Amino acid sequence: MGLTEGYINNYWQTEDLIELMDYLPKNLEAFSKISNGMLSLKIFAKINHFFNKNTLKGSKKNIEAHYDLGNDFYNLWLDESMTYSSGIFYEETNNLSEAQENKYQSISRYAKSKRRSKNT
Image (cartoon, rainbow, N blue to C red; front, side, top):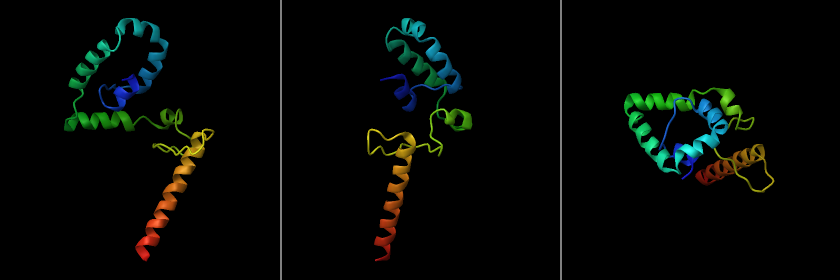
């Protein structure tokens, strides 16, 4: 499992994701030498998870850490719609904006079909 998947699956957390994303690429060579494969990361993840449990207080802290990052962070990897969900890539050549538009159109078609079926 990769670092990103581990983060998504809540195997590890950080108080400053932006700082970590800046730090890791700059120190990747040294980090890979120290990590001894994924074993060290797994140990680190277990320790970190222990200290960041999803208790009521911990959950509030975790939510704030994920959602209070501000638009500067999200502008780095979202399209201009700032949609925080996956788009629909009908073509390999679709860019992120097109994929998001595809998703909006799909949602609209679905909602219209639901309305029609409800009215019949």
